[in-house]
Image (tube, rainbow, N blue to C red):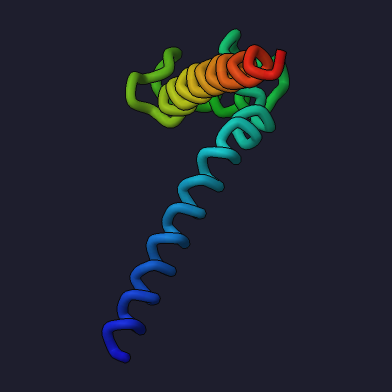
Length: 102
């Protein structure tokens, strides 16, 4: 009985970890988009522009490599790449199903 309880606890912890990571991955584009970090830069007057301005002032006029702003831009690029790859994968899979239905 003890082994079954331990196994169930382990499975639930793993499931919670998977759910947390999945939720974080799915919410990343929403959070970055809400701050208006895009692959093309920042929108004037956005939260992202304010963060970038503050970082530049604090660093003497430029955004330092490894700063929060730099990390957010990298995250935006990664999210964009993942979204593009996922979109391509979905199109490929659906094309395979459409081909088999005809």
